[in-house]
Length: 139
Image 1 (cartoon, rainbow, N blue to C red):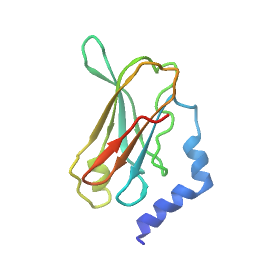
Image 2 (spheres, one colour):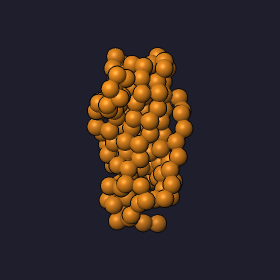
Image 3 (cartoon, rainbow, N blue to C red):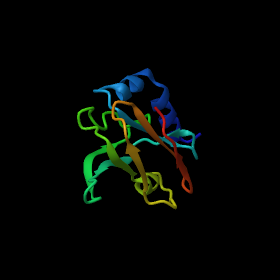
Image 4 (cartoon, helix red, strand yellow):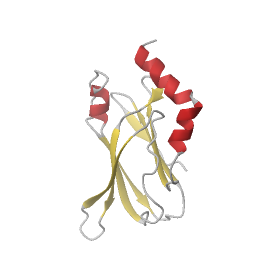
């Protein structure tokens, strides 16, 4: 097993990292990147969260983040800022794979979704390999 994969697995199962991943104020929106090709979390992946202006359809950047050792990015948005509308998370997948010396068919992945009830919790995971990805609405 490669040293990189062992480090990823260690970061995923240690209790300290679980506490760190959940630290901070709870966000009504969460994400989790899973590298399904290697069976590890997608750690250190840059991402951006945007909201679409309903009148102009232009995207406004809300926050820029990076996934932690568990592939999560806690504290994406506060409950006060989380309003009904169309949102987009852009994951920098090309940079992620390049950092491991790999190439990827997708230079980035954008997941666009609609929030109708900001009182609910939304989870938008990204399951990723170099040549495919999938997502779903979790809670």
